[in-house]
Length: 561
Ligand code: PEP
Ligand code: MG
Image (cartoon, rainbow, N blue to C red; front, side, top):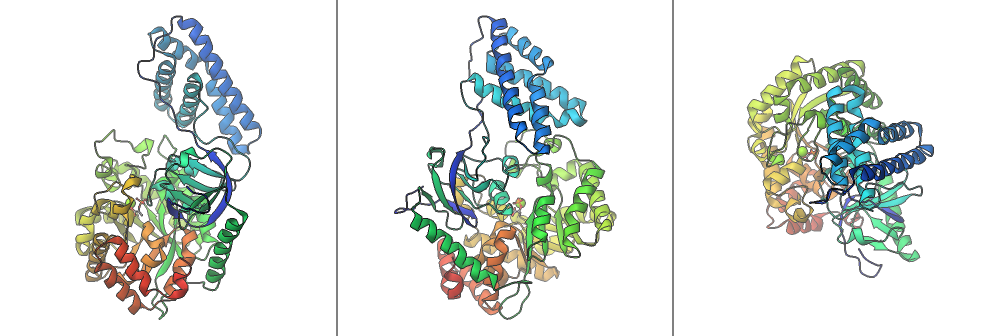
């Protein structure tokens, strides 16, 4: 954080510039250890009931000013806060000798388990139940309600970190930018922000200390955040944004290098709204539809009918353009309540992605059936790929299931180094590969992508990561199969040139990044891209690699970076 004279930075993860007042997101609080039991459980119960009532009133007040969908949710949640059965449960826990916040937490836990067992509508309410619990616990401890507070003017949201589900529910018209203290380049919150077209900076030290209401200027490209920016600085920032816009306005249409080699430019999307907004932009289709994003806040598995409806709505806006769908990539930092296999020591190395699908094949079967129906109902060129494939056997297993469902094109993500090194065998089983550079960097460098402090290791410019990508491309060439990129690396205009030089035939990214990548490709020949790839691979460090490629880049591109 900085004033306009010294500008230390976080990491810019979603492009664009914005200025606005700060809204701080408050963290959830947990019951304190060794909370004393109340001397008079009945009196304590009366106090707790008042707190539940005050939460119900707050929710009703919020409902009054909200749109119809939010109104329904908030009113239903207020009803839960007044539920007599829940109040009785709290009294039972107090009588068992528990302190107030522990009693509330455990009573809600029991109730949530009952709701889940009932399924259907009740199971859907578990999230609301937990929301009530979080508010009541905070109020009992004399703190403000956790989560994103209500706000009505366009603002800059600041948090220690945001869960993907929290980010997905932000109203993009009211959120000018997002800043987090934690998070990293490839954390799912960063990815969602870019998809929503909201400028974002992660890893900003001291972000949580910025007072609420402070005006900040956020540069989502450089990662620079300026407190109380001067009018001159705001103009400079807007000037930069305009220069970039003017340069990019001159290039449109399919991606190609200066000498005409096609490199498809595709969008990463996470649901129906993304599909509608991406389809209206200048993209050649979708290179990654993260289907798990649609179901992040669901407690029960979506039915065949629900999924068919959603996928049809996603495909339709693209007409006959390509849409690559990834089957559910649940687990690790994207847990899905209905696909939970219990705690693991190392979730990122555990039963996630395709491994989870193999253990819960009914989830995959329903999804493939729904995709097949939606594909038949629309004219999109639908392709289906699996996440987290490690071996040729896994690729063959997945391909068989996809083809059995009558889907014409099957692929795999190459995001495990093992699959990258064996790509000629893995890709021989399928029609195409797509490099997931986010996970590929995480596993190549043994650095948790959620651990913002390890950002340097996770940098996709690391020559070792580029070497693994290069090996995967070589294998694809031997197998005679196309390979693209759908990780965040594809949206970095300089790195996109290196990737094209390494042999990828498509780049998929947040639609907000497509313009600059198209511009970059159009300024460089394939021979220059090859040279850049060689220079990056020959470098000793990530910084050297980027510097070497920047030195070879066209001056018009360099001027915009
Ligand atoms: C990746 O790992 O690069 C990828 C595209 O998938 P996700 O970010 O959803 O894990
Ligand atoms: Mg991945």
